[in-house]
Image (cartoon, one colour):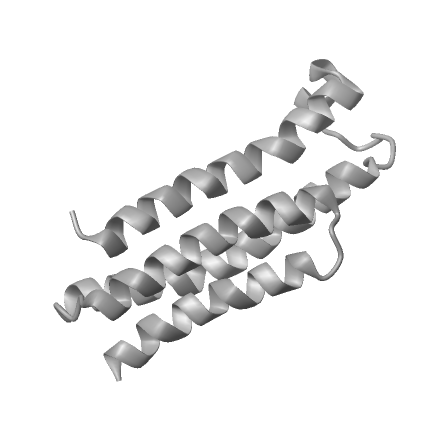
Length: 128
């Protein structure tokens, strides 16, 4: 499997973890019965849950773009050291982004997001 596909797989695993964080926190806060129901009258989510949900949504937005880039690289047989490095930069920056987002570290979070974008730009430039 190519480095790009490996990083896409790892990113999907990371995304699954990011889906599970706010879901698990909500179960712990509200109880399994409340979360398994219609969830019409739940209390306001905690600050941590809101942050984790924003992180999950941000990862979804970025996964769409990253997935397209990896698929195009694979279909065009355009894999190179640059696309491999770009995919690795994306993944590790997203790990750092997740940690900094959940920790609430100002300035670090957007810097990590910017580095992940650089990884995608590296991949896109290799395709042009």
